[in-house]
Length: 459
Image (tube, rainbow, N blue to C red; front, side, top):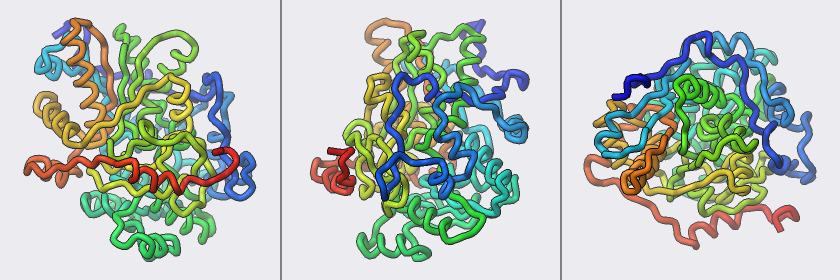
């Protein structure tokens, strides 16, 4: 082992970030504005505030301030769960026989088991500051729901969570953790909302989608006073909060003179990937590095690699503002793969714009190969990774093997977003040899594309 780089790199409490980094301030071109679904005019602050928390709405529309102060209360909470370690994967390197140096930023050390708590606590804080009594949200695999349940418990807020039915069936223990923190959890689509009932009538037996769950959460929110809807990914303000990951990563790398050549993250809605690469991406835009950034998504939900760059609704019920993003269509219902956090039909507008402009690469992989990588990683690094994170592990291994073939010594960093201890049904399927891959035909994709709105901006 190298003497100058420890296996685990931790920052001191004094080195913890006091500000979030706003990548939009460094983008040469902004992504297209959100559109009002009725007028198709760019969304106004007061219109966003009708759905979202006021301060978060302001952050969503902020593309000028490079740094935004983290509230003291949120900083104090971060001290309980951060910094997260940057770990050198010495044993994985040895098994692969690669000259590459491999590191991973591990976000699974908190009770929620993932990076989602970074934004959940900020959103709960702003809800409390606004004087709200409750909030609503959706969750896929359950990491976001778990994190938000914890955050709302901390600030004394009620929270209603709609969990994608396919994931709720696969991960019942996640529901119990959320309930333990006082959350109300409903598998989606449900009979609680008109949208949920309609979706079940139109698609009997559906396992649901994040788009369905979002619609239900917004409908419930709209029916209540002193309540707002919050989101765990996709939106700009979520990537802002998650930038604490990338800031810590960059500080640690500079401290030990680690210069990344490749940074890899799994991609569902974009919160983990955007937070991980943000500060380095800002430097790339300004011409200060030439890092290769890779987004990894499932073949069964390939928003980047097979989606269309168009304005689309963020939900199946077509309630949200229209977002310009890579999308499979708001009506797309993905197969119930085990990486439930990567089953969203669209991608972050920020990341979509960066991908469209060539700053970011993307690759789609099947879940069998993902779990092969997860198994190898767990055996040599001692951490059982979440299925979502394992997508990044798969491509990190592929890139390291390319270095083995070429003899190049590259520095590879990937985001390990969380642990897989609530995903034992998935590992059970894998160990039994019953893991299946889903390949989408062009006909399958066209069904989703047909739900993309026919508006002038998409013609």
